Length: 329
Image (cartoon, rainbow, N blue to C red; front, top):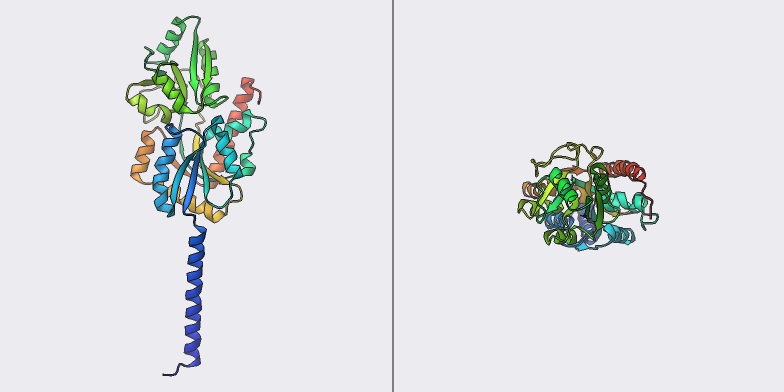
C-alpha cells in the first residue's frame, strides 16, 4: 500500500519527536552524576556526621545516585568550606553544615578563605537546633546550680569547659556563663565534638558546650548530663532541662540552623532538584523521628529561606561577638 504525502509527513514528525525525546533523556542521564559527595566539616562519630549519614542514605533514592558522606574535618569546618568553594559547580559536590562554618567563621577570621555570599549558593535548610551545657559522669552535679556550686568548691571557681571549635558560639557561651556566675571558666577547643565527647566520657574534662545532637545519646545513657539549653523554649527531646533564659541568662534565643550548600554557579535546575529531594526525605516519618531523636527541630527551608536565615543569624552574632570584645584573627 502506497502512503500518502500526509501520512509520510506524519510519520516523519513522530520519528523526529521520538528521536528528540530519546536524545533529551540521554542528555539528562549523562548530566545526572552517578556519585554525589556530601561534605561534612567534622570527624566521623559526631552529631553532624550522624545527621549527614541519615540524610545521605535516603537522598540516594530520591536522586538516583550514590550519595557519599565525605569528612573534611578541621578548623571548625573551614577546610570543608574552602573545598566547597574550589569544587566544580556541576552538581557532584554539596556541603552539609551548621551555623558555625558558614555564619560564624567569617565573623571571627579576617581571611577565612571563602565568602558565603559570593562563593556558596543555598540549597535547602532542614532543621534548627540548640546548643547546651553538659557535665561529665565524673561530676556530681545534676543541675546548673549544682554545677556552679561544684566548680566553686574545686578552688577559686576555676574550671575547663570543652567546645567543638575555637572562637565558636559554644566558646562565647562559656565566657558569658563565667561572667554571669563569677566563675573562672576556660574554654578548651577541640577539632569537632567527637574528640571532645571522648574526653568528657573519660572524665578528662568535666563539662562541655555543644549542640544537643552531640550530647543526646550519651545523655540518655546517663554518661553525661545536659543541665541547660539555649533557645526560647525547652526542647522536646529534653523536656526536664531548663533554658538558659529560665536560669537568668537571656539573649541566646536565636537558634542555630542546619543547611546544605553548593558551589556558586551551580545550575538552578540542579539546586531545585536537590532541594526538593531534601524536602521529600525529611518528610519521611522514620527520618523525621530519627532527626528529632537527635535533638533537632525538623523544618524544611527553601534556598531563599535558608539564605535569609543565614543572613539574619550572621547579623545577630556579629553584634554579640562585637560586644564580647573579640578581635577577628
